[in-house]
Length: 419
Image (cartoon, rainbow, N blue to C red; front, side):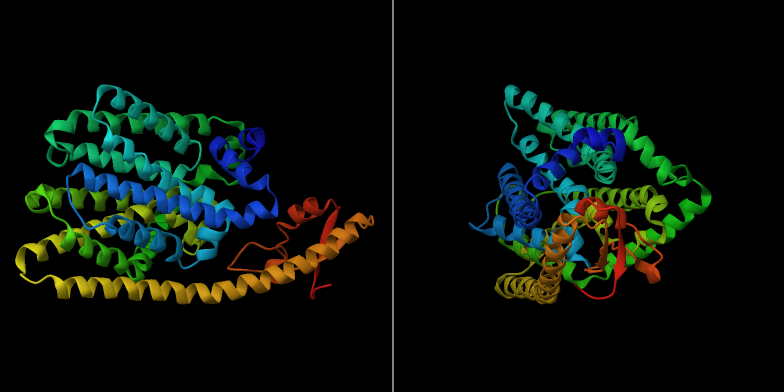
């Protein structure tokens, strides 16, 4: 799998390893990938929230870090307009959903390192993580590189004095290791073939840059108007109201303003660059291919939690009774979760119907292929805008060749009903 990806497909060596990790189990691997990756994302984000609160000596009631991590995970995985491609489809999740989670998780050892030995080990982890991101997802690599650059620019006012030198070194090391991974990817035969197939040379033409800007503007508008993301602000308000400690009340407002500005710049710049990278491949579909947003969407959700925390801390300093504000935040979180559950009910029904039809057709096609038939009819079974052959009135036949390879036949034809 690694040889195939590196020399023929796209050069993403780490992507190949992750694909192999579930593809080797066949259909079971495809089915179990979503729950396993969902639990992994929740655990990593939970550990990140708990570590950050402990490092900044902030005390919160037991269970609050898990609440925050659960809301962030739910919004990230289920708040997408196309949850199937974001979460249930392993090929998209490996490339665009898990990488930003892994990148944020790399901050856990950075925050915890205090001794000289721990700091050396942390730098090794940062190097491995950065290089792995470069060989896993170009878009997430862009987001994290720009985010780390923005962090370096404001580090003089945002990073604590006692850890400023180490944190700066971690940021610089992360950027360098990501660039190293990207260079290995960029020079691979698979990446060169992909650039030729997808006409990547048009990426920096004026027309492509302008079209990317127009597409990113639409993406930004849709993201800002997705009301479910208010759940991130709501859980941040709850966190801000419940936190107590030296960092809970005395951090200067100018520092927060600088951090907010850096985060906004990182989101806007990285989001646009990601759109520029993907536009030659997807064209105008970059706006509707919502899975491509995930590379910077997790950072956006975390940013909203931070904004909510600032609001909650402000309320905590100005009002005597925080009970009503806490209740309002909890109700908002519950309303968002209810909306996410409601959207998943319809998707569940569609997935069940698709699974029944796929199993039926799969059994028939396997029996026909085993009998020596080399040309098989195939009925399209579209689900959540998944790519199917014979789209656009039958003119678009890709990926008919992939289906033919799967059943070891010469080719397939379009069928209008299930066998």
